[in-house]
Structures are given as structure tokens and as C-alpha cells.
Length: 116
Image (cartoon, rainbow, N blue to C red; front, side, top):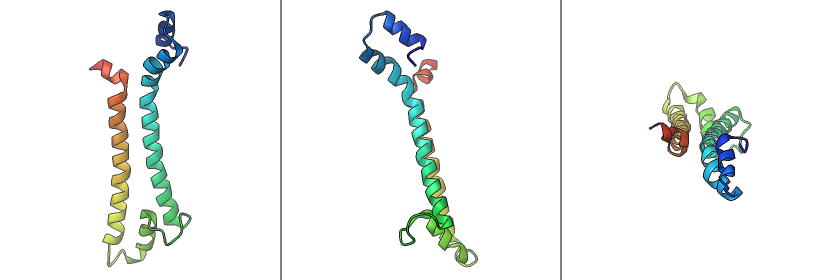
């Protein structure tokens, strides 16, 4: 990032390293970091649920959505809601995390605010 035109221009105007970092570099890297963090967090939730569903997750006594889905497989014919609600909650949680990350990117991305 220090090779970018806006950093070179700030340096040519006599800005200190601290000012260049806080005013030019951080605003431009904040939105990608937020997006990566939100997708990683959502991926970790899905990975934990998948491992628990397969039996490789946390201890069996610990309640997890993947464990609930695994235990409810035998009851799908008679009690479908045992698998439906944990699956829906898992889906809505991951979707919500991704939407919040996307919204935060829209709020903090200086390139998007310059277009408006």
C-alpha cells in the first residue's frame, strides 16, 4: 500500500508516517478486513456444525447445532422440527453475519462513499 499514489502524494506534502497510516492506509484496508473477518467467522460456525454433525466436533454432551442435526436424523419421519429449527437457525445466523459484514463494508469503504 505504501506504493499507492495517495500515499506518495501525502508523503510529498510532508505528512508524517502516523498521519499517513491513520488518514490514508487504515480507511482503505478497514473494509476488506471487516469482510474477511465476517466471512471467516461465518465459515467457522459452519465448519464447527459440520464437524459436529459428522461426530468429529466437540464432546457429545455439548449442545451444538451440528450435534442437534445429527441426533435428529433418526426422527425426521415423526418429528421433523427437531432437524428443521436448528438448521434454520444455523442458516439465519450465517446469513446474518454475512449481511452485517457486507453492511459494515458499505459503511466504512471510502471508495463507496465517494461514488454517492
